[in-house]
Image (cartoon, rainbow over all chains, first blue to last red; front, side, top):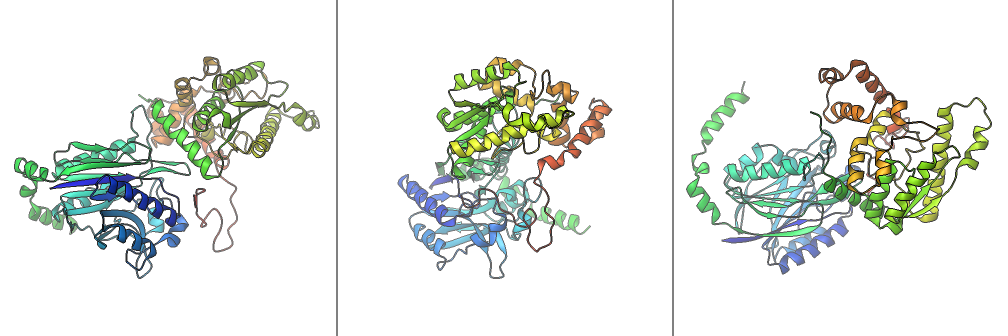
Length: 282
Length: 273
């Protein structure tokens, strides 16, 4: 089976959900014209990133009675969508969230489980921590979503792998930093290295959708990528510019790679469990 | 080996994008820059010209009667090469009446008055030209506090404030800033014969490497000494950074209410854009 995957690296307006929604709907039209089956938007694509005290005023809930999601759910009849937003739960906790929409339904919502609150980041001050890492079924097989800092830690991708994900959808609003003599920023090199490594280690597809544009002095570097189960780069978006990067994923590559390299078959999960129990009960 | 080399293409891409994006979001398409004839303002001007188009950049030369003639000439070289708009407004008539009130006035006080007079001119031109003032302070002088508060430190946005002086030099070379400007000794040109390195007491090569370890690489002062820097030099610089922190912040507001600007009223300037 083939999956035409579109990665939408967009710039957003800070706190202007209506205007960002328009950009989503325009981008979805472009993706449709390019025969995409699934379009993945970056972290917080409906709101912008450094929200601070704007968080409570930009929150939405992914249901049909929400004016923003009603339009996105309608659009998801034509192709599947991953969108980034601020989710407010019934107890009024706010999460950095990504939702997978398909055929007018919400198939999955991921709440970011690692909120960076160090250096230039202050997410833990404004958001609640998600507490689940779950794979989910789609019409293209089982997938998993992680948001930025989630995949800076090794355990969430590992859990998704064990939970059955064969396609990893990673979204980011990654501020560019670490300018030196290399042609890539340190932050870009780091992210690309770990994305490729996860593709190799988990013999899976790893797609990354990262935003572009600026917020005050922060730049966002874009550079969407897809790595296949052999760790080969099958798509690369431009840096710093808005773009829709479309890649055709040959999902049968999972069969061929895992026939050669049965890392998933041989993974000793009971051993992991035993050792984790021992380590954590110390 | 401490290497401060930057990739000039990448720096150029990020910094010109920053100027264009942040200016446009504030509702502007033009920039105003005080062009001293030195390196920092030359680089800021060239970046702004590339980001906005040279016709949308106003370079303002603001000599005082004791300013070096080279400064004016070097600024003119840049204006001609990059075809930005320009204007020359001498500040002597603005500042001499104030300086003349105190025959004992120190050079530092006089220099501060000149820097702040230039700020007044730039902000006036900002309104007249409908452009934002682009800052020209580099990371070295920001960290050392080698700046006049509300004078040369005043701007609407600063594209080069995260580049050390030696990196400013490298990027300037890559962007075609005339060699006369790159090669000469950096100077605030507030009095005749003044040079930054003479006044600071160390070279930019030395200080940039030390600042890079202290700030970017988070070395402790003791680790910097172990890495080969002179202890007295390290102590002098650490003290200088600490004592100039006030120059890198807005004035603190005394908190009495439940929600206070600066503490818990938190929005980016790009809010809503």
